[in-house]
Image 1 (tube, rainbow, N blue to C red):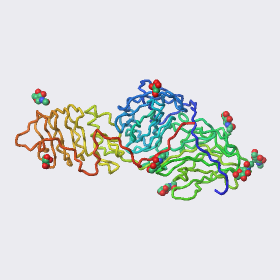
Image 2 (cartoon, rainbow, N blue to C red; image 1 turned 90 degrees about the vertical axis):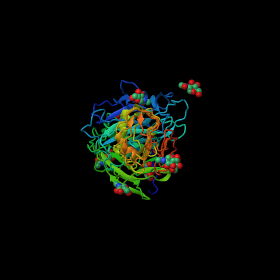
Image 3 (cartoon, protein in one colour; image 1 turned 135 degrees about the horizontal axis):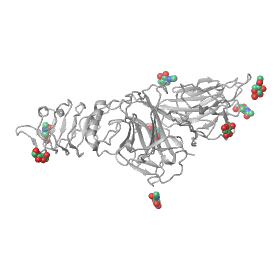
Image 4 (cartoon, rainbow, N blue to C red; image 1 turned 90 degrees about the horizontal axis):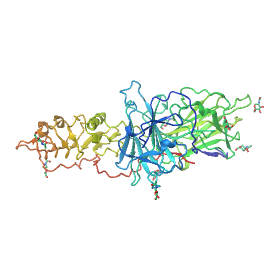
Length: 559
Ligand SMILES: *[C@@H]1O[C@H](CO)[C@@H](O)[C@H](O)[C@H]1NC(C)=O
Ligand SMILES: *[C@@H]1O[C@H](CO)[C@@H](O)[C@H](O)[C@H]1NC(C)=O
Ligand SMILES: *[C@@H]1O[C@H](CO)[C@@H](O)[C@H](O)[C@H]1NC(C)=O
Ligand SMILES: *[C@@H]1O[C@H](CO)[C@@H](O)[C@H](O)[C@H]1NC(C)=O
Ligand SMILES: *[C@@H]1O[C@H](CO)[C@@H](O)[C@H](O)[C@H]1NC(C)=O
Ligand SMILES: *[C@@H]1O[C@H](CO)[C@@H](O)[C@H](O)[C@H]1NC(C)=O
Ligand SMILES: *[C@@H]1O[C@H](CO)[C@@H](O)[C@H](O)[C@H]1NC(C)=O
Ligand SMILES: CC(=O)N[C@H]1CO[C@H](CO)[C@@H](O)[C@@H]1O
């Protein structure tokens, strides 16, 4: 970069409500959930976005009101004044049926944008904003470090199984740090958006800024409701804001970004002065991808030229690479992809816009969007197992508030299952449904054919012992003790010598004297030998996470 003095532009994230009221068709899926609100009447905010309460999306946690409205910059006060906290359980999940209750829609949604917002507002009067983890559809998403300001996390990913529900889970990771959430938004994206990144990887937002103004753009100008944050006015005497004099800017359909972004730009006062964009990302785990947007702001005559190179540090390189040299056109939008970027000193990424030698005008930029490419998406727990768990949940209401992927991400399984979590499509190996107050009859869950342990003792199951319980090829422990089972014991169970069967405490069960049932009269123990499985019981301790979780840059709305 030679001896040039670069001016450093921090992307300070200042927020102002935008106030455009165009009527546009929104994204196909457009669900906005005001967490902790049970209001039955939808609330429409200043951007024409309709918010609903979260009752229908989650069964756990408790609704709370914030105490302090200080530092609520940029957020809708009505949406942010309630939240849901999760004092019990390690993992609590929202499950959002993006078909909105309709049966399998012919129009498949391929990609979604999910945004989770957190505004602490001292709701618990402890002045102690918590830290916890966030997951989507069985994948690790981020560590949320809340503060007194509004923060949000955003991820874009593909739904490989079509219109499966979007699940968002919060997991407690630190003692006394109770997870909470203020808002949750799901928007569908068109399949060609962000398609230059392999769809088996998620994109986790790090920055989405517009320049030359302090006002934000989101829905309705961006029909996908991406939030393009305005920035701080320039006061350093090096950079300045300009308005685009073109009455209209052509934005090709492929870019699908709002025209409004091109009304303004950031430029240098001095034609030879580069623009330097930067921000910090601690613990970057994947490459950074950026989209930068440009448009010439004045009609140029024959002696004027605006041309500059775009430089950034490519993963694996030791010096800044030139990604592209651009000459923006008046009245046209230009998108440049800056891919495979990594961080440099002190976990900062840098993008330089450096004027070419023949340029008579300084560089400029209208908008910038940046993502981290996350870890490969998991497939999710085996679908036979998931469907069978759904049958159990349908039969027994007390199981219904378990949502999200039952096994993933490891170690956050549901409390009453164990999984073989060595793969990205784990199997359920144990059901620990002892003492759950189950009354009635079992549905046929024989599709869960990787089960090794079924513990149903101490419930009120009152039926004949169903034959399907004898069909699990891997079953080693079946505990049916202390129920109201009746009739005879199926021979498939009696004849299975590998099975530790317990049926004591079922007074109406006919046990022929000679049989070897209750080969052990005491309750069988959950095997602790079987090596790789995590044997999780309902008294699971809080697990403090190791270093495997990505620490993400939180999008913070603070002055
Ligand atoms: C918060 O706690 C303080 C004392 O610690 C108490 O005076 C105040 O009334 C509490 N506020 C609310 C809203 O509970
Ligand atoms: C851009 O235009 C707006 C009004 O359209 C005006 O308020 C603002 O001052 C202009 N900014 C610059 C840098 O000229
Ligand atoms: C413009 O910037 C260049 C390089 O930073 C510097 O040498 C020159 O003095 C500057 N000109 C003005 C008018 O500030
Ligand atoms: C081009 O525009 C610049 C700035 O307005 C002006 O100084 C210059 O004389 C113009 N040149 C021609 C050939 O019109
Ligand atoms: C990014 O890096 C990956 C892995 O090194 C490589 O396969 C891919 O081609 C790179 N993409 C671009 C656009 O440079
Ligand atoms: C056992 O069977 C009898 C008669 O069928 C019934 O009255 C009784 O309630 C049953 N006992 C239990 C514990 O289910
Ligand atoms: C980054 O990772 C290191 C080691 O895994 C950890 O000690 C540190 O706290 C992390 N930093 C942040 C900001 O999470
Ligand atoms: C079938 C079975 O598990 N039998 C066990 C019963 O318990 C005794 C000791 O308590 C074991 O030795 C048996 O193997």
